Each structure stands twice: as structure tokens, then as C-alpha cells.
Image (cartoon, rainbow, N blue to C red; front, side, top):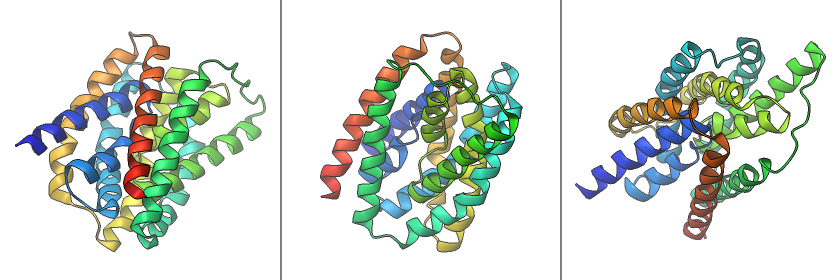
Length: 248
């Protein structure tokens, strides 16, 4: 009972972070490992599978709010589609310890960057359409690969990277919702083949993740995004350190 209640609260919380700040998908593989008792490989694969449905709901909400720039979506999703399968395949071949360390490092790095990005002046968006297309495709390719490798949601990586290159906060989070669908689908194809997805667990947590996404998406259009970013950054640091201790 305690485990179910914990998973419900964690799933809603992670959904809120994904829908409200983009950065939040890092926590689900870790949460499933700690609270559901699954292996790291099962946690990453199951987590990635649930992000397909979170992405669909989040994308619909952001689209209705006019917060998705679809000209940014095409190149970034193309990049993710090309690399998600390869990332998931590599993750299935890695040892549990190695995959745990990769997750811990990424979570910690995301936390540090998320905390620091608010104090920097973002770089200007690239003016030439071809250059911007290549940049977005590169962001998508990197995000798709790492998302497939570790089971984290696409926005957890794409949002900080897009902010770094000067894209607006709402557009970055909105594009991340669509990217999440493509990257998760690509990686899940590999995970289905290698058999690491716990479909029963995925069905359970997806319901509450979706509730969380809708709550987060609602508030991100009304609250100060800087405060949300600081909260997420701090949580990432705590989760990263905890996962590193467990891995070692």
C-alpha cells in the first residue's frame, strides 16, 4: 500500500515537472528503481514507454495554448527519431552499474545547469534557417540518443539545451512535449525487442503521470518559470547524488 501510494505521488509529481518545466523525466527511472523494486534496465525501459503518453497529452495542451512553434518541431523530432533506437539498444547492453552511473551524472549535470542557466544571458537564436535547422536536429539527435539510453524524457535534455541557445521558455517546453513522443517511440521499439518493459507497472503510473502533466502545463502558463526551474534544479541534485551512492 505504501509503495502504491508513493508511486502515485511520485508519478503525479514527475508529470507536473515535465508539464510545468520540461525537466523532470530524470526522476522516473530512479523512482521505479527505488520504489517499485525493478532493475535499472526495467526502470529505464518502462519509464521511456510511459513518456509516449505523457508527451501526447502535453503536446495537445501546449498546442491549444499556442505554445508550440511547429517550425522548431520538425528538425528536432527528426534528429530524435534517428537516434532513439540506437540509444535504447546501447542501454540494454550496458551493465547495471554503468547505466546507474550514467543516470547519476546526467541528473546531477542537469540540476547544476538548470540552477545556473537563469543567471546567464542566453545566446541569440541562429538567424539563418539552415543553421537553425541543423542546430535543432543536433539537439534532437543528442536528446533522442540519451533518452533511449537512460529512459529519461526528452524535455529533460532538450529544454535546457534550447534555453542555452536562446529559444523562449514556453516554446522550449512545448517543443519538448512533442519531442518526448518521438524519442520515446523510437527508444521503445528497441526496448520491446529486448523485453525490458513492465507493461503492468507502466499502465499504473501513466495514469498519474498524465494527471501531473496537465497540472504542470496549467501552472506553467501562470507562474514564474524561474522559481520552477530552481526547484527542479535542486531536486535533480538530490536525486543525482542519491543514485550515485546507490550505484557505487
